Length: 453
Image 1 (cartoon, rainbow, N blue to C red):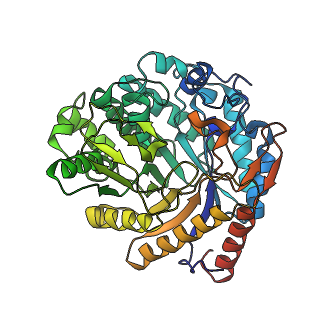
Image 2: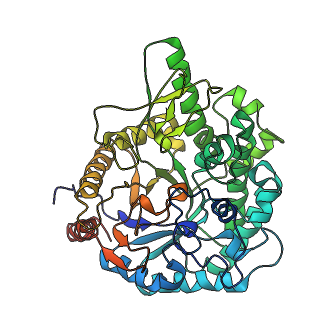
C-alpha cells in the first residue's frame, strides 16, 4: 500500500446522489423533477433509463452492505426534494420521508455516518416551471424543505450538506443549456447563482433551528491555469476563475462577492442577502476533478472541464485542452497535484476564515468493468496529493470518493462509469471492482495505523 497515513480521526467515505441512483421516479408519491422532464425530452445521450437509475430506492440495503464491506465511516447521499415535497411547496409526502428515515436507520445500524446533501440538482418540476433558481422564491422553498428533513432526521444525522455544486447548476443549467433546465442565458444566468447561495444561507438557518449541527456545503473547485501570455489570456483566465471558484466561495466564507461588477449583476437586496449567505459553517466541502486551462476566446473552443461542451463565442474566455497528462474517459486530465494546489489556494485566500475541509467528491470515469486499474492509480495519486496538502498545513478532515456505484452520469447516461461497484444496467446486479477492494484495504490500513477512530 503506497497511500500515506492520514491524521487520527480522518473520515473515509463514498458518495452518491438521488437522481443518479434512486430510480423509482414516480413511486410512493414522488413528484417529477426538472431533471426528470429534461431526460424525458431526450437529453440523455445514450438513452439510459433515468427513471430506473441503479435501483437504489429498492436496493439501498444491498448498497449499505457494500459500504459496510468497505469499512466506510460515512456515506454521502442526497435527499430528493421532489420525493419529500413533490410540489416544491405545500404538502409533504410522508412516504418519501419514510424512505430516508429507513435509509438513515440502515446506515446507523452498520455504524456508518449518514451525510445527506439536501440539493443535488433535482429541483421539483413545479418550481422549475416557475423560474427555478432564477426565482427568488425558490430559495425560501428550499429552506422550508430543509427544515422538514431536519425535523425528521436530525436526531440521527450528524453531518449535513446544503447544496452541491452551485457553479455547475448555474453554468450548465442556466448559462449554456447543457443540463436541466436547459436555459441558455449566458451572463443573465447569474441570478441563479445568487439564489442558490441565498438558499444555502437560509437552509443553514433552517437546519440549525431544527436541531441539526455540523453543516457544510459542497462546492466544485478547479485550479485555473492561464493558456498564454497575452493580456487577453490573463483576463479570460481571471474571469473564469472568478465565475467558477470565487463567485461561490467568497460569499459563503467572507460575505462578499469577489468582484464589484459581479455583485452589481446580482438581484435583490444583495448586502442583506450576503449576511444570510455567510452564516457560519462547521466545515466546507471541496469537489475536485481536474484543473482548467483558460485563455482568450477562440472559435469553437471546447469547455474541456465540462465534458467537451462547446463554449459560445459570446463569452470572453475559452477553454483549452490540457496536454501531457493521462485523460479519464470524460477527457479530463488526471492531475493529482491540482487537488493539493486547490486546497493550498483556499487556505491562502481565506486564512482563519476557512473552516475545516472535507473532500466531498473526487473520482474518475473509466470504462473498465471490474479490473479498473486506472481508477486505482487515480485515487492513489489524489490521496497522496491530499496528504501533501495536509502536510502543508491545510486542515482536511475527511475524503469521500465519487462514487460508490456506477450511476447515471447526467446527460452522459450510463456510459461514464465512476463507481467502485459495477452496475449491470439490465439486471442492476452489483459487482465490486478491483478499486473497491483497493479502497477497502486503504481504509483498513489507515485504521490499523491509527488514522481513524
